[in-house]
Length: 124
Image 1 (cartoon, rainbow, N blue to C red):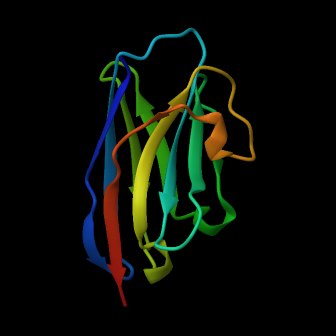
Image 2: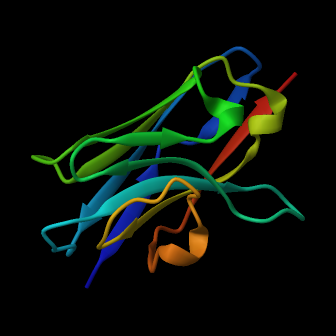
């Protein structure tokens, strides 16, 4: 059974930083794509960043240069370093995974496995 558990969310002032972590268990496959999505109240769940098994990264335009996705295969973990946070980054952040190649459109429907989410709140 695949389990994704996020941690690291919280409240921070604009300009601050947070690091999200996702512990992954039960996920097998020779190829995969993992990523971070976010959903603000009343809005759709949007892709933030994805990373392939081979370490190829892709980011939403709104976070390029501020956020960095990374993975530690030895620890079965996924991370999202978020710097220069803005109030518009406020959302529930979700870790997601699927067994297959990453696609640049970061469609949430491609991902069958999700964590429960961790809240990020950025105040001005």
